[in-house]
Length: 240
Image (cartoon, rainbow, N blue to C red; front, side, top):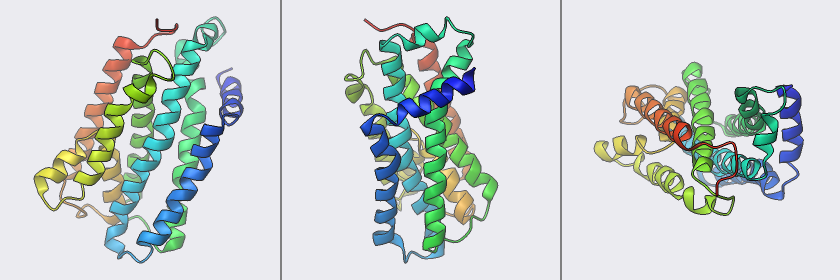
C-alpha cells in the first residue's frame, strides 16, 4: 500500500514545473558550474568541492521540495484523508517522503558520477561517503518536514525556510575558512555535518581542519533539533 501510494506521489511530484526544474535543471547547472570552475582541481581538493555541491543540491532540491510537499499535502487535507486508509501514520509519512528521497539519491549519484568522469579521484573511504550522503538526505527531509510544521501555507514557507537556508549557505562559506574556529563553526551550521563527512570520505580523514567527530556531532544535533520541532508542531490537519 505504501509503495503503491509512493509511486503515485512520484508521478504527481513531477507534474509540478518547479519540481521538474529542481530535479533536472538544477543538477545540470551544478555539473556545468563544476566543469567551468573546478575541472582542473588537484585531487586533494575534490572532497571539499563535492561536499559543498552536495549541500547545495540537497538544500535547493530536497529541502525545498519536501517542505513544499508536506505543507501542500497537509493544507489540502491529503494527510488527513490518508490516515483513514490502511496506511499507518509511519506509512503515510513514508509514502509522501519516498519520491523526494528517490529524487535526491538519483541527483546525488548522477552528480558524483559526473565528477568522476571529469577527473575526480575515487573516494578513499566509500563507507563514509555513503554515510554522509544518507545523513544529508535524512537531515534535509527532516528539515523540510520541520519547516512545513511551522508553516501555515505554502506561501509562508518562503519565510519559515529562511533560517535553514541562511544557516546552510553561511556554513558553506565558513567551512572553507583558514581559521580553525570559523571552520568548526561552519560545520556546526544546519546540514553541513553530512557534507563534511562526505568530503572526508572522498579525500581522506586528513582533509580540512575539522575532526570527523565534530561532523557526526553536528549531524546528530540537528537531527535531534528537527525531530523535536516535528514532534512539537507537526499537524495532520491544516494550520489555521
